Amino acid sequence: MELSKEQQTELTRIAVKAGQILHQHGAESRLVEQTTQRLGTALGAQSIELSVSSDSIVITSLFNGNCITTTRRCYDRGINMQMVCEVQRLCVMAEKQLMDAGQVKERLQRLKPMKYNRWLVVLMIGFSCASFSHFFGGDLPVYITTFFASAGAMILRQELAHRHHNPFVNFASAAFVATSISSLGVIYDFGEEPQIAMAACVLLLVPGFPLINAVSDMLKGHISTGIARWVFATLLSISVAIGIVASMTLTGVVGWIN
Amino acid sequence: MELLKLLVIDAWFAWIPAVGFAMVFNVPKKMLIYCAVGGAFAHSLRYLLMHFGIPIEWATLAASSSMGFVGLYWSRKHLIPRPVFTVASIIPMIPGSYAFTTIIGIVELNSGGYSLELMQVIVENGLRTLFILGALSFGLALPSILIYRGRPIV
Image (cartoon, rainbow over all chains, first blue to last red; front, side):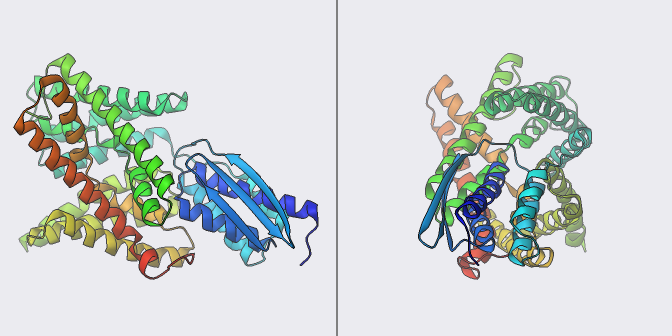
């Protein structure tokens, strides 16, 4: 297969677009690297060299001694596994020669992030945190308190995320709201151990995906990306803790450390 | 029989957070059922192991590595990257409560002054968070570390 200069530029752009989408929607670095390289070689490049950092990717394609390098900044668009699945599927199809460069480009541009109905998510997150309260040994009244506290926090979180507020501000205010609602349970003595609701209702704000991604990046050799993700997740947890402490100081209800 | 009942209750309460968080991560609709099965399986396996007196860190490692291999099978079958199922499935086991206790303890340490009890709470919870989290991620990464070294899984 012979590539002209234009074709090679086009191929590089397609590959970097795929990598950018993966990075923005929360794929781990190894997946970004592998998928971009496979897509590039499937479309005809001899090799693809890729450097993934925490907020940008740099890619170079090689063909018969010609190098083309391009950089893309990757702003966080929120975790979306459906986009990661779609890009992966395109990569597999290009590898099996079911699609040429033009088709891959068109499909990549058409991709739209799928979002679940927000009220359905609020309901499920309410039940999730309520289930956590069961694991901590809470009874039915605690279950109910946790449900409402975490559902309220989730509504606020979605609302702030929709308006592109800073994630740290977002998480701190959501933690504040959740702790305040659940401290009502302690004030009115609702259930056997109402403090459990205060511990369970903020668990929707645990940055689980960044933490897992951070450790698996570090395990697979992307140390600097892993450290960046780890610091981000730690800062999120700290802002959640600040929100909790602010609410506990204001209401005077102590639910965490006695 | 009593143990079986406890396991079923545990599995029932574990699939709900797995699916709830899978929806926050926008996992495709067809894959939600796998997240539910994975979450119930992994958490009840950890419950079973802890019931027999295995420490929480090792039980977590066993549960997450078996989830890693189950995820490997599903991902080969459906041609979908592994984190789509595996991360949502282990979300019920993430030590969020320990992590927040640690940081709130640090905040208290600043405002209320040093005390030995508080320091004990911080160190114990912090170390437990780190080790459980390490066990979770390491367990999930095992298939690609041991079997698919540098090769793509799908």
